[in-house]
Length: 329
Image 1 (cartoon, helix red, strand yellow):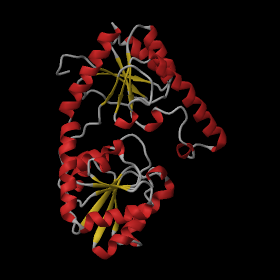
Image 2: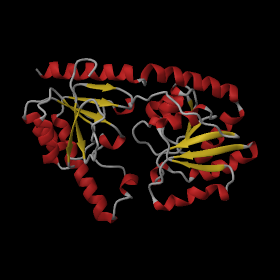
Image 3: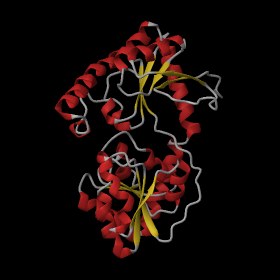
Image 4: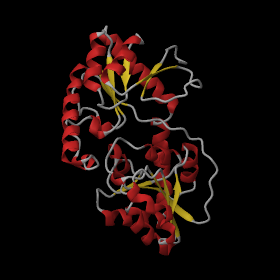
């Protein structure tokens, strides 16, 4: 809006209230017809799509038929693949549920033939889908932090707690860090009942503590005083927790996921490529070599400040959308 553009946000399955936001919000059910009607009725110059492949093929067809250019924002690896990875299908009800999900993904994938451009939050996904205009624009995060204190040295794990985030790995990590007097703090919402035990994990593992969900500012505060961010998630999009840690000048140790290969190539920490024992050893290296950890954190913060602050990325996105509109005529 500060650059002279009006924004209309189609809130899919939105519940409101919306009176505090400085732009128009149009609620719509998660059905292709409802979303398409809301998009076309707004009479936009361009549609910027951030709903993955849900209802995608139908909506992009309707939008393009109305003469409006369409830009798809890639948010995770499954946005760019014809079929979802098997590990992402395990959570669906039986073989029929997984098969339905697979067919729907493949059908909606055909919508990419109609788009005018694509943005990706991870450089690895640029080029994964064929379209003439593509650009890497990472997510943006704020650096404001809430005050946080903890009586002992600690590392932080941040994610919503569910199976493909692999929170169980934190148990063995806490065991290995216990002799060094280092705690493992887990932040996030428990989204599967199988992990309810984490609420009282400290009763069995005294240096493993669950803090529950926290705001962005509270997470920033916890990261500010941490030795490192530890990440056990399977590959996904990029992970705002990486960006938050880097902006707080903290190194990251990842069990498997290295977004854009940045952790290893830029020296922001360590990536264990799925080797759990190596992951634990990498965390111990960070804890026992603070000088190296500080240098890793400095490099990470410099990169994040150059690529992940809102004032930079909003302008980059607006310029890209303008190019798409001009090329579409």
